[in-house]
Picture 1 (cartoon, one colour):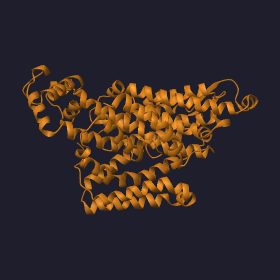
Picture 2 (spheres, one colour):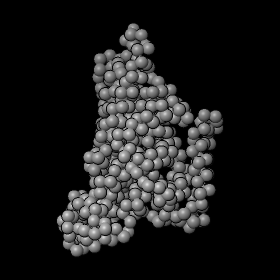
Picture 3 (spheres, one colour):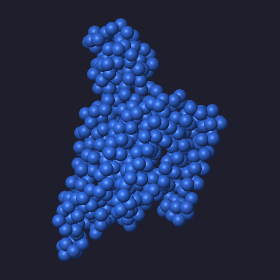
Picture 4 (cartoon, rainbow, N blue to C red):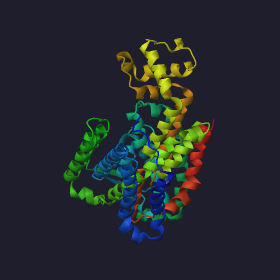
Amino acid sequence: MGTEVVTPNPWMIIPFGVLLASIALAPLFFADWWARHYPKVALALGAITLAYYLFGLQAREQVLHTAHEYVSFIALIGSLFVVSGGIHITVKGEATPRANVVFLLIGAVIANVLGTTGASMLLIRPWLRMNKYRLTTHHIVFFIFIVANVGGCLTPIGDPPLFLGYLKGIPFWWVAEHCWPMWLVAVGSLLAIFYVMDRRNYLRAPKEVREHLAEGADTWRFDGLGNLGFLAVILGAVFIEHPTFLRETIMVAAAAASYWTTRKPVHEANHFNFHPIQEVAILFIGIFATMMPALDWLQGHADGFGTPTPGLFYWAAGSLSAVLDNAPTYLSFLSAEIGLFAPNDLVREIQATLAAGVTDPAAVSGAHATEIRGALAALHEYFEAEVVAGNVPVEHIRVAELLGVPAYRQFVVAISVGSVFFGAATYIGNGPNFMVKSIAEHAKAHTPSFLGYVAQFTLPILLPVLTLIWWLFFRT
């Protein structure tokens, strides 16, 4: 599965740690210096790691694989950013706490259709406008929590980790079927907390002030709806695997066509510029490069987790997703699960069972009967055409093993939920987070610093919700 795992020197994790520390601390203590020099820091640290992999480890394939992941990542979120920036939603009416809750709930649902990036870029500007007279930090952070992260947990389109899982063979609707209870609890809990906070904020403004500053009757107007066609092209392109870079080429072409065909007043109304995606693109060059040793070390030491439990994988995948990009983190833990639960000898037994023409799982016996029965059942449920044709890829056999055995299936649910939900814990946990922050700052909204975000919102608000998810679904 994927490229061959290399064994980096643990000291090579240092550039990644330095980059994370710089992203967290430099804007707080050296804001002006960081604004001018962050590209040099990110590219220099990334170059150190790349040089080590290319010339020290001779891991050219690993570097190319990571580069391809980076290009796919930036092409997707960049194209969604550009096309969404060509759609202007005019919102009039008073942003009451109830209206805000409904808006965020709609955003959580839309995130599963447009992806968290597309939904965030489409809705962040109307969200800022409708709350303009009382805009504060909790409006920005809860938008990141719900629309840019937690909301996109129901489809592979919703968040990059789930899409990568889909490409590895996890069926499209499997995520919604198994993750909807966690989605419901998390979104519901965050909306309830937001309502309490937003109502307190709302009541601080005297009624006469609210009536004076709020817009008239509720009206919605949409400009640039022709860009929905370009969004459809981008979403269709995500399913293209071959030839290499065709998917990314289509996405970039759709974004370019959108940009040049969108009327200038629409971009002006959105205050559209390329700074947010530029910042994300540069920082994530460094992140994707420097995180290679960290992910390779994790994948090579999966057996050191002791007795694995879904709860352990939920917290481990989630915690790393908070500070790494959650897509490769998810893949690393999926690889660890395959190494633990679908080793090569078991795969060979399943292949032999298929070759013998066994179609009834109940007819299987032997030391690994439970695992083989579960895999056969999942193969017939999800990959029936391949089974009938007698040509089942090894990767799909491994996925069927994970999905067919209930105990193993819960591990896949755990890393799926953990990777998506914990992406909200920091600005670097998921690609849209930085872009939302940048757009909010451009609109003169109050946004917390990196550490302020964690101290004021992640630890006291998000962490208890994440703990509740663990307690209800992954504790045993």
